[in-house]
Image 1 (cartoon, rainbow, N blue to C red):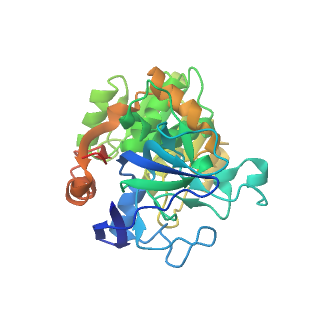
Image 2 (image 1 turned 30 degrees about the horizontal axis):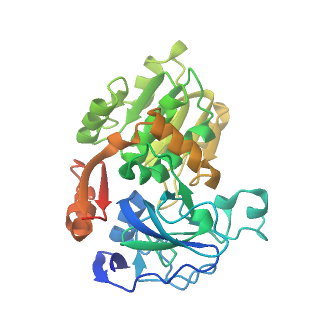
Length: 357
């Protein structure tokens, strides 16, 4: 079958590889339909390997060259013994986290996403979404509502990141929320905050093209360019009592963006770190203490979020499909997908690979 594989930084190859074997007990074989290109995939391409194992993964044994893609879904082609929750012909979304199901401190407590042995389909597992087929564990595939399109199925994973970030921040009806970063996760986080009941939304990004995209998608969101004005001052000026926002969610992995969150959030507010920082970040810890804020990480998502997020998308409460700016075939994925998304101009938001092309 045809697949896109990571070999090294700036070395992606579209290759013919062996199709997955027939599913063993507890496994499911799917024909992939759509796969999103994630910021993590871009980082692997530009700077990797990061999450792609340099040595065989301790839990899965996977190593390069790695089939990329962890935002995807497909149609079940075959199931192994003992699999009863899906059947051939079912449309499914892939929850890509792979880990021990028991005998692990976090797994035994249902916190599968926090397992120290965590792996991901498309990063540290033999299969991924940027291929014609994928072999997965039964717990990795979730049957999706009939009224959810194949494209939307590929957006459940990044939307789950956004929903969890809002949950970690305690966003609720009436909240004011700042999101730093107008990339796909940032925009989905704005949508998730609105779905949770937030009434005042702000987004900060230095790229005017991205800010214009946000204004087209979410006209009532206040867009801020940190290179032109103080984000904290602007947020305080537009919130009750001039105190700042209730929740600030950092979706970039940028030290200036995190500092802007701390500046903009009110006393006893919550700062949520969602973006992955590539190095140490000096923060004003006096301000953390003086403002009495909560500073929380937000790693991936609990694996049980899939039906909830699928329902939010299907109902229109979280209109995730709006972030899609381009659809391409697998043969175009490197030049028309990865390279376009790494273009500093920022004209593309989310690009989906259509595996049927």
